[in-house]
Length: 139
Length: 239
Image (cartoon, rainbow over all chains, first blue to last red; front, side):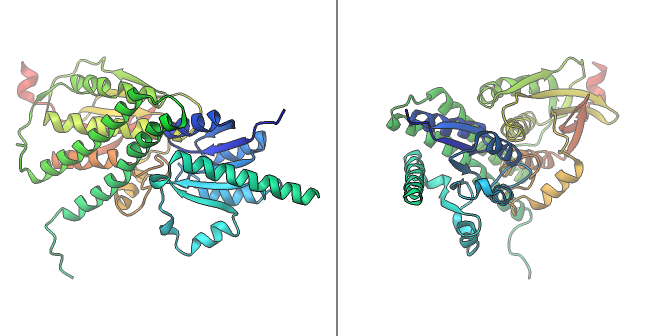
């Protein structure tokens, strides 16, 4: 039996976090939802997620701080991170390149214009891409 | 450069920006919840209603703040108001929102205090705005734990305090002062308290200012919060 893929959601808004969790669970994922960057690191350590969904605006430590911390561990260097944020991507300007490059963000989705369906598709695409890479590496 | 904008309009622009940022949240929440149906899940209509009501209250408070500041359609005639009744009404309005956010809402109006002189609707809108901003902010500070928000009143040296309180040590006078400088400029003016623009707090701040009151950092027993000192009327106290 195939094991469920684990997704870590770091979303400070409780209602939105629950909505995302329900949508992902109903699509066959195992989900952990936390509100802060600190809890994100703790849960990543405990659950070893296959993918992370991250809001950048958090209370205290920001999503960027989480990303820097997360990527500093070798075990998590290749875990795909999707930013799902209320900060419009345009505000990042040229810094978007470093998000995708150094910090390994696989997709930047703006909350206001991204449906749940688009989010689910992006997650599935990135997880299947990762599966293919693993198979390639193994052969 | 001389500004051609009337006095106070910069304040309104900052508030408007803050509201625009904040109002996106309930709209996104509603949109995603409504999308559940297309994914074969059950859409929670009661939740959608609560979220929509919360958005409407925020916009109405903003409009009231502006109208009070401009004194166009509201007369700033103070009346005798019972703080306990204001807090009770706020509690009733916020029950559903608090339940959605897993925040335990408590009402602490045990003290028997004399009425205060205030603009009733302004005071009501400001207290509801403050409390709803904190209801949204509290769960963002620690994952999973249920938090408590208290609507409370107490007497202080300068009058009767009406406030909202929780276990938020990061909410200091310095943080509020910095937040006032940053609102409308930063996406998160109260970065250690709220994950969004905390528009409810700043709209309440503007409403209080329009009523010649000032929002303060306040303490109630062991809790930290935001409150306003209201003057009692010596005439009313004799009754």
